[in-house]
Each structure stands twice: as structure tokens, then as C-alpha cells.
Length: 191
Image (cartoon, rainbow, N blue to C red; front, side, top):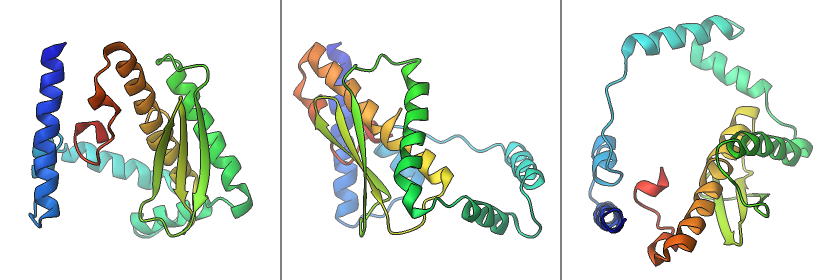
């Protein structure tokens, strides 16, 4: 257990060094960031599998012309009306929670609140308030389609950052390691 703690802290220090270098103007590739900040190496994509997947999407997606244009058109057709955004986001969040609750024992009092804001510098943000409560702030500057609603519900809520905070709370309760209460903007835990 102590070795895992030391490994975690060592990795966080290396990720901090990488993040500081970028803030000081160091340019890096995605592969370097994956290796140096997240401790990962990307495998090479299976070109045949990618081609098969794109062909299947093209077959299933209505319309003619470039696939990218057809995807954009399809997503536009699934734009959520402004007066339904809150309800659709809640439905997406509930669906994600239901799937996660089958495999992770969630606290009975855990809760997520969704709020929409204009002029945010990011797509969405999960702000953990403690006591098993997270507020997901969603950028409301552009349209929200069904796929974006589901992606945000999963990434920010279940099994995303909200669940991450719940698990960190649980780990802190078991180990009392203060470093698990921090949420730095770098390192492996962001994944």
C-alpha cells in the first residue's frame, strides 16, 4: 500500500513538472504528453478496423455526400430545444448513473446538480462540493445535441469526475492520505 502511495506521488510530481514545462512554453506532441503526464503509450490504430467502422457508419447514416457533413447534419437534427435541455441532461445523467450503480456501490446520499452557464472557457466542469455532491456546469453557448448530452453526463458525472470524487472520498476515509483530496489540473487521475 505504501509503495502504491509513493508511486502515485512520484507520478504526480513528474506530471507537475510536465505541466509546468508546458506553461513555460515547451511544446510537446500528444504522444509525449501521454507518456510524460499520464504514464501511457498509445498503440497504433488498426487501420482496417477504422475503415470498417467508418464504412458501417456511412452505411447506417442517412443522406449522401461526405461522411463528415452527414454526421454534422445528423447531429444537428438531434439538437435539444432550449426548453428541454435540463430535462434531457437529467435523463442522460440518470441513464449513466443506472449503468454505473450496477458495478460501483454509490453512497445513498450522492447527488449531482446540472447548471447551464454562458461564456465558459470549457465544455463542462464537475465542481465537487464534498458530502457526495457535485455540480456539473455546462457551457450553454452553443447547441446541445443528444450525443453531447450523453457524453457530458458520462464524463462529468457517471462514471466520470463525480464518481472519481466519490471514490477519492472513500479512499481518504480508508487511508487518510491528504493528497487524494487534491484535484490538480494535471496527471493520470484526469483520465
